[in-house]
Image (cartoon, rainbow, N blue to C red; front, side, top):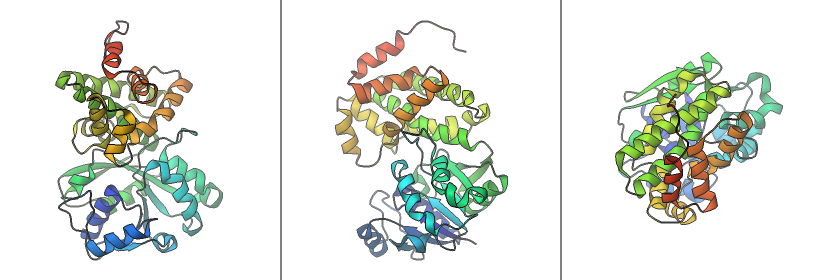
Length: 334
């Protein structure tokens, strides 16, 4: 069994910490918030994961060196907007050659970097020759992992041995882990599917039914695949668990923050008010600027992503947005 340090005490970090502890690993969870550390340590409950008890064996700390030192695997489970700042703080305590697994999904707006690329950028001065980075992604709601419901996930890395090590550590009686060499493609899927999930939620909020939602999910993945393959990702990645699998679960589930935020917008709430009501990070909104910039740079058409941007950031009425998509110039599907 292995020692695992987890940076981030949100729903996903806590759900994974429980699973890892229950499979025999020694787990330390770090949070930047001392009050959160105290609450988790004393109550052994996470407010957004009802019905789950945190194992007594898990150690909670706000001491970053303690969480980063002498770990077989370091897991980044903070929201995407905090990945760079967290790694910057942790860098002095991360040894060269450390296996680092990231579960945050997003694109950094200014750089258009995926999360493992952000990590690599921050650690490059210290660890460039020896960094071992894995993206862990797929159709995996924390609420279901916290209840041991059957789940599959993808460990993606350029380094096959790093992917296999992560696969070994995260495999459990209810979680099946696949490896994938296309880390960039897996991360693009994880970031961009959240934007399409917003669109699916908006459609549901408007009462447009299953036909419209299925169309948005299918055509949305076509857009993501078009961009990803243009940028060098593997076509098969978009047809797999981290691609269409993650988009289906994020675009249809009541557990999905992105879908639920879109649902509220479709029902008439402003994007700002919807985001506030969700109360947690809505990654799809954060991913829009990077997605648009990548699409422009690659000269790739992404009409659904562009339309979601118009609704979220420029005040386009959701009903008008749907009409704009339906009335686009006629074309062949492929």
